[in-house]
Amino acid sequence: MTHKPSVLLISPDYFNYAQMLKTAFAEKGYEVDWFSDRQGGGFWHKALLRLNRRLVAGKIKKYLNGILSFCEGRTYDYVIVINAEAITPEFVQALRVQQPSARFVLYTWDSVANLEMPLKLAPYFDKCYSFDKTDCETYPEFEFLPLFYCDLESREKYERAPRAYDYVCIATIKPGKIRAIRQVCDELAAHYGRGYVYLFLQSRLVYLYYKLKYRKEFKGTKMSMFRYKRLSNRECDEISLQAGIVVDVSMRHQNGLTMRTFETLARGQRLLTSNGEIASYDICDPALVYIYDGEKPLDFSSPFFDENGTLPYNSAIEKYAVTEWIDHLTSIGVMQ
Image (cartoon, rainbow, N blue to C red):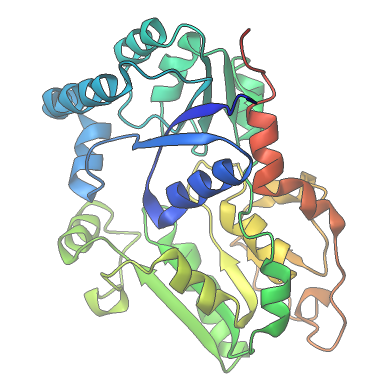
């Protein structure tokens, strides 16, 4: 009987990406067990985790011990950890003892400036990847591997979808993003008649916290400007499919391209992004990508805003499919 490779996948659970990854691994022939990279996904738990881990250390240890108990008696070919928000070196060391034949792979889709734990964990992994080119140049432990898109039929879906909106901006609001989002959406609203803007915050309490802590940035905002129910990945997709332009504003200190970048271009949609790093990628076509620097007004005379022209198809996007990403991530090979 042919051996079916097995994966222990530990990753974030937002926007249904965990389920999409589990499905993609399964379709590639892997047996998958999945755990979140941290217990609890709420804003305050995450804030405490980043500001002072000692306050949640007991809870973290109990959660990680639960994963070790689950894995006892099981054998994995790969242990793949993504982002490692609450993963500790002690946990990885214990897991390595428990899984001596597994290849350990670490991937981060956040920048070191926003998430430092992967640096501490890197020595305990066989291979480390990051979506951030700058981090890979700074930290030789990491090899560059961009993010991906999951829906391999997204282009066909977009061609069949109605065009209800000229532009769509669906964003989770974090410090360093709100000013740019408001500015670009105001400019688009003045030019177009049909826009959809959904600015998500975890709660009204989070809004008040941001309003007090980041007064200058949140000056002029109101609680009613934001939504407090997170859209599902399916809802985001259904709305975005109906737009001519998708707006994507990156977090501060982030150089890696977001998943939305690849999802949008895989559909053949136009992408308006604040991340200038995309200019160095082979998927950057001026007819499909507009880089917004926040300093100059949008140039509506640009070919990007020409709604009458036929949009080109850039086949380079195909190598960013999740199937290719999985192949690269597991190219380290199974130990014999």
